[in-house]
Structure formats: structure tokens, C-alpha cells
Image (tube, rainbow, N blue to C red):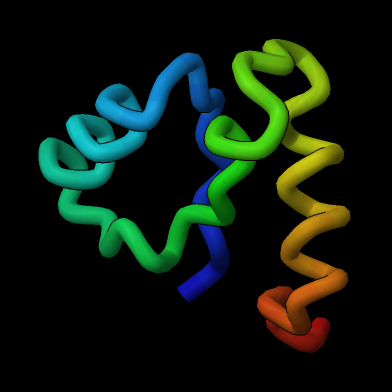
Length: 59
């Protein structure tokens, strides 16, 4: 399953998002605890972190 890219305005938001949409919380690359709400930069930041931690699926 591809990693979901999630706008992360807060930790509770990500938790609620995951629960309501049935996404495993460990499938979401966390950014908020380290960077806060970075709005439009969330997607590139998540991709960079996922790459650093070898969490991106091979194409």
C-alpha cells in the first residue's frame, strides 16, 4: 500500500484521519511532531522523510 500523504495540522488530526479512513497510523509519515504545521510543504517533507527512512515503495 502506498504511503498516504496527509496534511498534518496536529497530531490528533492525523489520529482522527487515520481512524475515520481506515488508514494504519504507522502508514502515515509523521512530520508534525518535528516541524509543526508546515501547510503546503507537508507533501515534499513527507516524501523526503520517507525516502530517508526507506519507506517508499520501489517503482
